[in-house]
Amino acid sequence: MNILFFGPNGSGKGTQGALLKKKFGLAHIESGAIFREHIGGGSELGKKAKVFIDRGDLVPDEITIPMVLETLKSKGANGWLLDGFPRNTAQARKLWEEIQKACLKLDYVVEIALPRDIAKKRILGRRLCKNDNNHPNNVQIEAIKPVNGKCRVCGGELSARSDDLDGQAVDKRHDIYYDEENGTLAAARFFKRLAEQGETNYIELNGEGDIQAIMDKLLAALE
Image (cartoon, rainbow, N blue to C red; front, side, top):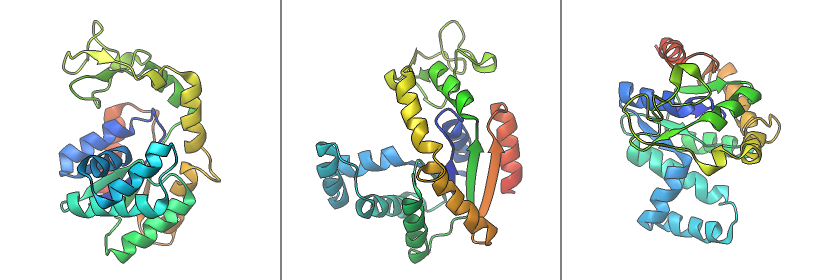
């Protein structure tokens, strides 16, 4: 099973992805990890990407997309879940073209929808467990509040990303995601149109529910 995942920062996408990975044995492939792996491993694509990153420039799609595909092929033999890419319509269109050329199947596209104000509130209250970043802890959500300042799942130490505590930084990330003309939601809509043409399946979930309720709905849709 191959899944492409969309959702704004704060939607619980990482948590849901981790649960799917565990249940189905999927490779959970995040865009940031792809860059780190290729650059750290010294691959030819990684070397090319590093030149742009060191200059503070965006890595061109002609480098990024081959890196994504190589990772899907090498790590996704038993199925994959791609998270964090594509981020605009041009990337979405090119990724779809290359997936087809590579004879890879895209079984599902999943979008977790969440109002922007709620997503921001969740990010500002998010706390990360040193043992597992996907353990849900949020000081602003009663159901997943830390216990005595520790991870509610395992009791591990908690911390917060500096950009999670910066409201302006959160707004910049969301500016990219919620842009339906040039941003990530535009990419999601590209795949939604493909689903309407019978090319894949599109699952849209309401991210305002609790973790288990969202997972139950997602699993039901995947069956």
